[in-house]
Image (tube, rainbow, N blue to C red):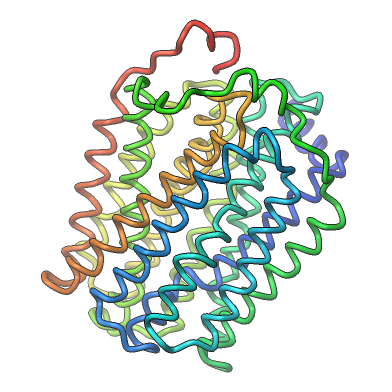
Length: 408
């Protein structure tokens, strides 16, 4: 218990950690304001068909994959984290401010594909910076997964009240107010980065340049590729569920917009202690096994959503959602970073690409499945994807000899 308390004391004695906490909160608030309500915005406010909404969000996700992958390599060897985070946060501000006032479908697709897509680099760069802060601190390598989960916990902390506040803002000021609030959070994020984050090149740029992975290296790592596909499948389920759940609560369960906000506020309350717990577990057990347990929890979560009949039952299911997020969204970041210890930007972008590609798949499938087969069928597909993800995580990990000393 004393050692556990000492870990937390370290968090508050290092000024860079406090900055990371605040940045995670701001970014978490920005996403928690808009993510639960995007399907409502597209379908109910703009008047998109479900298929049009799927295409709209797919274009945004594909843009994020292309832009994020292009910039990730340079972020490890040339550009500072400060520059990258400023670029992403300014794009986020412009993008969500544009969503607040645009109603034209083509214009929204353009903004999503290029501006919002550019803003998605902010998350990957923030956690790449967190990894570099940990590596230049006195914290042992074996303990870093715990601290990464704590940083991720602050991102989740914003979700405890973000969706509920966004629901209130939407009732008072319409969806336009929600997007304006998200843009303001990105402005604040940029101001904090400009003041407190150093503009120096990445501290491990020289090592990254010497150990640069050749193009196509991932295709030679079948184990890592399988696990990346597993995380991608889970992200696809998260995206489908994120788009599906608000409309499911409103149209099928006959709930209210307040019910939607409350449903998305419950999970983060449980995520916080669970992220601490699984971060602690990751310092003692194989992270691959922990990720497998997350796939099992995901199957249970989507299975229960298939059979609920009232909004309050969805609220209970959100506890399982909290466990799934605490495991996969926290542990997976350090899992990929540990396989590329000198390339935190590239490694975190692998994780982010799982998010983007999963989102691309999820948005497209949501529009197709919900339009043809209804909302419950979407949850059934989510459960099936989680099962396939579990099977992919059974592929054993093979660590190349040159990485034995650096990969945990």
